[in-house]
Length: 355
Image (cartoon, rainbow, N blue to C red; front, side):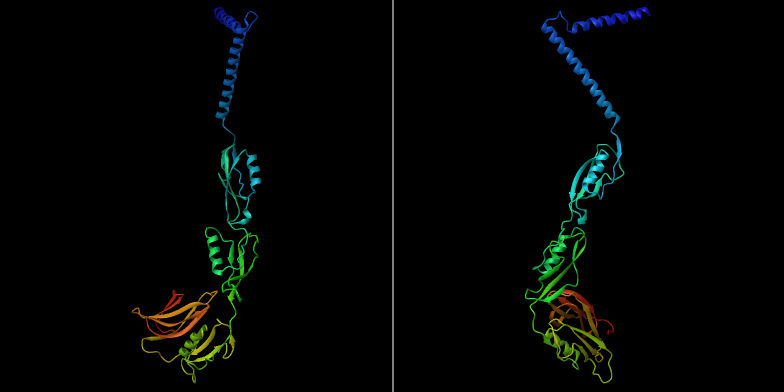
């Protein structure tokens, strides 16, 4: 044991002697003293750097504190940032349009989702709404109605619509070209906060002279139909069973009455008696269909197409849209085709007994 302590004491003594050689003293020259100071300073810096590195490495191994991602969806951006800061989380912002104008400036999505456990200091992606693509009502006055429809359709093609045209549109006579938007509600510049109905007043064009309703009572249905087509008066026929004292296939009632003045495009309603029995393999019936109302009259055409493909135009006229109903007597398996501007709208097949 004494030998052990002797060796330790001897080692310490030798170390002390070596340190005394390094430590500056009065016997050293100025150059030796400066060299020793530099050496000791370098050794001290190296020791401090080693200790600091060890401590940093220990902190990394220990790991950052964990936290739960809060739910900030629906919050204003400033409020969301404060919530994240309290959890020692950092935001990464993304901006995009949304379908709801009221969400402007609010968080509409986040990643990771709420409830996810992450380390403090992690970046949380916040998607913030820039508002709607359209947040105010445009000025549509002076534009064509069809242009407004196409514009709204393209504007909201990829998102929920915020503005729609309220049907039916109001049409009035006006010096402006037919189909021109004259008035609108809401007014231009009105902010959109949700789905809004756009009420439009549209020009029918300049007012034209009224027509006198011809007297159709007692005429055959074919004669009445031909006269109405020539006068460009829309029509809706109805039929009733043949009655004693009434000729088959004739007009027995009409509205408006004969002699009344009507505006162009006003339809006349006619009641006719059923015609006599049609030829063999032919059928009597009523073609009845409701078209949309058009801002201007359209070119309407009705054709009969035989089973062999032969086409015959029954009549053509200018028509404002709405209901159209007319009688026919055609061979079975004939197809009646109604077209607007030469575009087929509907087909009607003549089959069996029809009334």
